[in-house]
Length: 94
Image 1 (spheres, helix red, strand yellow):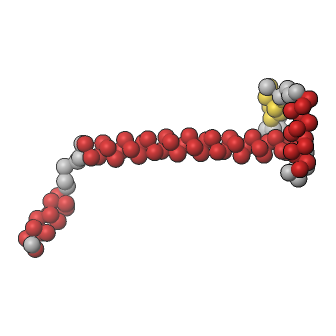
Image 2 (cartoon, helix red, strand yellow):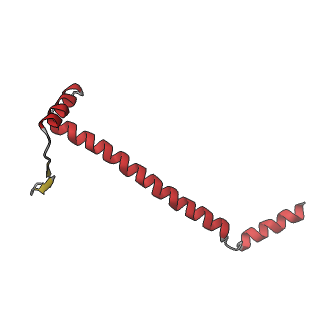
Image 3 (spheres, helix red, strand yellow):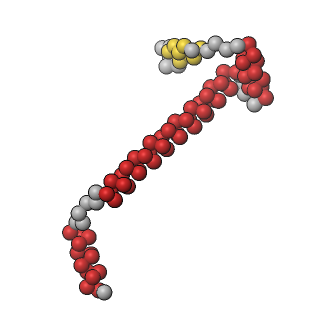
């Protein structure tokens, strides 16, 4: 698969397919109401790419959140002056 870029900022993607693959994609494009095979391929590839990237970003965010949470549990910061004052005030009210 080759990609070339033009001066206009657009890029061209070239791919080799079997005749059967091309006919199958053309049929799907027609059934799906796409204007062209190119539109079908680009939209389908973009949708799948977004799913993959979103899933990857979710996993990365989840891992980062877990690390932050467990680090806070296992290595808590010392309470600041306001928290100590609030705790002392609460103890006096009891």
